Length: 155
Image (cartoon, rainbow, N blue to C red; front, side, top):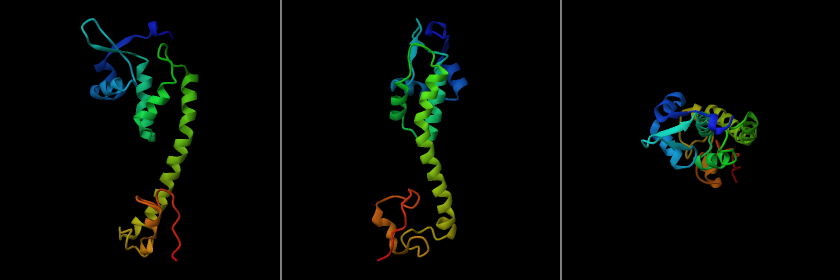
């Protein structure tokens, strides 16, 4: 479909159909993630195909991509015609690694819930069960076990 055949719709309809607030749409536009056309009265109008880009943005954020990463991914798509199924398939390949990382992270979290938070102490510094002597601190800040670090061996 050529851009000329892609109807323009008002920001309110885009918000309603996409489930994204108009303020977020304006923000996405300011970042160059989506593009609006101004009517003669100055109102924003979006090509209907923009709904695909918005859906992509929403789900990419859910997967854990930053808006900067999303902008990089979207920059490889054509602006002057509706993206094809092939265009979207190329994009989906970029997601595979991120999804695998998220799945592994969630599996570590699930395992950690049974080993750590499940014991009830909620203290990583004093927990003799999951982190005796705060050994995990040797690997740096943050939830080291959930990030995939192995438990350091006491010396």
